[in-house]
Amino acid sequence: MGTQNYQNHRKFYPPHHFIYLPLLLVLEIFGVYKIWDDKSNQLSWILFSVVIFLLLYLAVMLRQHYALGNQNRIVRLEFKQRYFELFNKRSDEVSEKLSFSQIAALRFAYDDEFKELLYRALHENISGDELKKSIKNWRPDQHRV
Image (tube, rainbow, N blue to C red; front, side, top):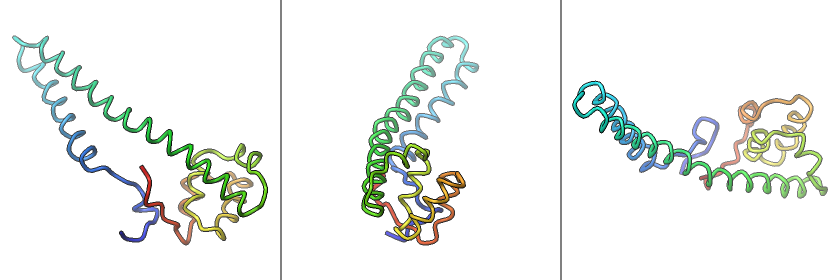
């Protein structure tokens, strides 16, 4: 696997993102089209479209909800552990001042940049996205959900 950086750090699950979701989207568009095209079966096509929409919605939300909730907890724990290893003290006071996006962004920085970026996050209140863009030496995370 290649070097990870800001441009390529997002992850896709091909069967879900490139087959299942597009197929549901095409079926939804087809169902909505048939509502207007086939007046004799309009109620059936409305029901079809509602069911496909619910499947699409559930597919997106359920997959994300559990995996991301668990991943967010792990990211917070990683931050606390790393902070303790670097500063030899608890991170409770510091982590309360940071948004989750800032905490998540800091994990992509190696220790030397971590300290500098943490200071900037606390004192300049820069966003997680800006923190990611500020990283010079990207620390990859190849195990994301």
